[in-house]
Image (cartoon, rainbow over all chains, first blue to last red; front, side):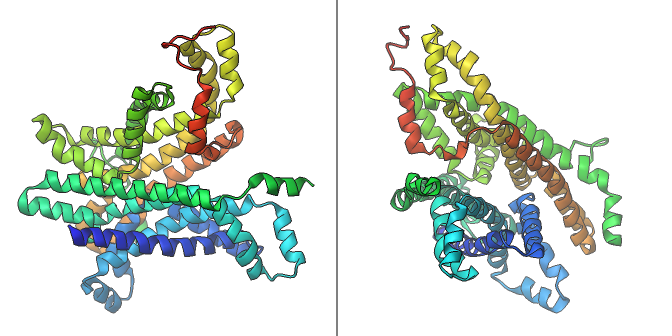
Length: 223
Length: 254
């Protein structure tokens, strides 16, 4: 059970961080001036958003080793931690599409004056994103981003389908070994609810901490 | 590509499962579960949504607890609860299908309640005040003035939620319901060499429905969405509760 909790948290944290990074990348791609990049980003998001995470878990666990060259695939199948790796990959891809969508809408919501100001102070495109656009975006999209991360945390329970030894899987194991399913599931439920609510509280705190005074920005825009 | 075409000869299995000779399955079952859940949870969600908006604490607090608790629980866990433990508690079996429908309904009730609440809160304050001052009771005001406007704004959210609920129905494969994911797995187990094609078919099934629906949601949003619903944060909502008139023993003095 404790290992289950550890693995659940591990998967959740790693996928959150990875998908945040990748999501930023995809969001910037979708915002770029180069058309193929935009299209690639859009195709990625449309594909991964419209197919359930469970499918991607099964896909990366069962099918991915098959379509690789046989030697590599067999190695992956034999790799004892492959369920965990596969679930991290799958959930990251799944979550990335949502995160990038959230970030993109955030980027679009930034007043164009910000970008123009960044250009006129001589920042390069990377610098524009790094110092001007992305920090504002993150502040702005914190609430939906937080909801998404909670959702991602809940999605880790799906990893049980591919026998990744996380909390739900441990619960099932306990049930089949000791028939104490009710107790184990209750504990698991309490854990999930507790962590999700704590995350929610943390996000509300962060939000308060990083709140931008929207009115001052809009005022500047209108002036 | 050839493999894919070959798989497509199985299309009937993916779409309706073993329907003419056996129970309905495949994509159709996903859709049926999703629609059933959506309708059931709409009505229950409306109760909880309005309950949360209520100015009486003994009504609103239980609703808040219910909504937040369900929203913090993974769908899989709820499906499990209903599949394994409700029969032991009730002492009788319920069919797989109904346990899936009930558990997902309960899951979606919380989300629907939030959508309804957001929709109601997005209606400008003045509407409620105007309705009350023209002598309507609160119930009348909600039914005749607030709901028609709120419902308009809720429609895109409902469609968007349907998409996510539809994807969530794939979870039920774990308790052994033969829906799209399960049909794909069955096919890929029968013919392990064609696993890739089977999974692609599965993906196409989900993708087509979800893509279509999310596009519909976007179009509806352009048409109906007047207010940014997502900008309503809980802290503001608490304050907005004061838009409900003070409770004078449940009666509003006109």
